[in-house]
Each structure stands twice: as structure tokens, then as C-alpha cells.
Image (tube, rainbow, N blue to C red):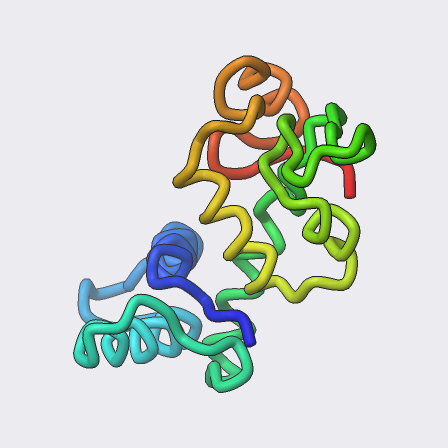
Length: 146
């Protein structure tokens, strides 16, 4: 099963903090509280991701609300897997990831995003970074294809 990485939980927490700020500096919105509990457990257990299947329902709903605001695919419409490459030079995904993208879970997609962003050698991060920004995301997220 795919895991939701702690950096995605942090991003969701920050996204919710902008949308539902604390009225008194102490009280958290329900979405923030749910995400903060998962985050705290990850920190306590020194883990960097939580299994998508075991994610508490309220925390998952809050994370999914943030996820839905991120670009779905890293595709920049330059697909070298269609030319026989095992890894796409345009987006950095494997042939299998390109083919199965529509069926992948949100956490699996974010895992792929994390890997290709950390590698940073796909054209979307250098040669065609401007094209990636125009397609819906700069650097760590973006694109319009499958």
C-alpha cells in the first residue's frame, strides 16, 4: 500500500492553516486537529510516512482536500515512453507509472511526484521547466496529461 509522506501532511496542515486560522492562537480547526494527530504520531515514532489505508478518516479527508488542489500529473506532453524509453525524459515517470496513472491512488501518485522531484532530472525540472509551470505546476507539481 502507498504511504502519505510527512511532507505532504505538513503541506496539508499549512494549507488548512491559511483557510481556517486559529481564532485564539490555540484552538485548531477540526481538519487541522486530525492532521496534527497523524503528524505527531509520525514524529513520535520517527517515521516519515503513514499508510494510506490506515489513515484516520477525518485526517484523510483533510489531506485529500489539500491533495485535490495540487496538479494531478507531472506530464508535460513530451512522452519518451511512447518511443520505447523505460523512463520518460519529460516527466520522469516509469512506463508502468505512465500507463497506470489513472488507476493509482492519491498517495501512490504523490509518492511518484516525490521521487521524480527528488531526482530532479526529468525535463520538466530543467529543460522544459517553463512549460511545466504553464501546464499547471512549478517544480514539484504540474502537468495536464495522463
